[in-house]
Image (cartoon, rainbow, N blue to C red):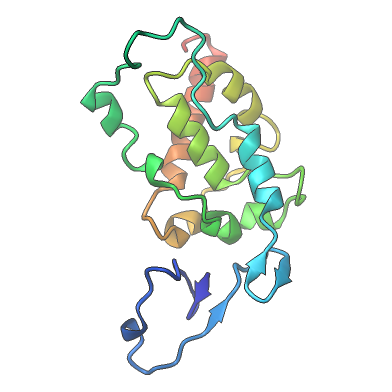
Length: 176
């Protein structure tokens, strides 16, 4: 929600944080309000689905599990904490200026794409990159950092998007 002019998780926001006793609660800005504090998140989740938000691994499954070393897991520590609250999406000027359904994928979808591309168990980088290295994908990010400031989980979507840009450039030259 948008509480006293900042993106916050209502479930974690304490009344005591506001010593003057004034609290203003509003829906996520720039998203279509359905009723009261409820906004339409269908376009947000439609864009999230485009990045194939699941592990893609076509190799034969091992008997126990697909092993991931602690070092490989640490690479995902920050981005795996995204709770899809849409705060970064709501705060993004590129999202504001794009088509609701077919426009810019947004910082949350791109951050989740990086989460899977960086996962050592995933084999779907190429097909994800085909989606996100498109006109409405990572190249539309103008690095405004609003998403970083808005994230209540302190994730840096801009860094994830920059990692994707590096990966896309290296991919153009057949490196990945």
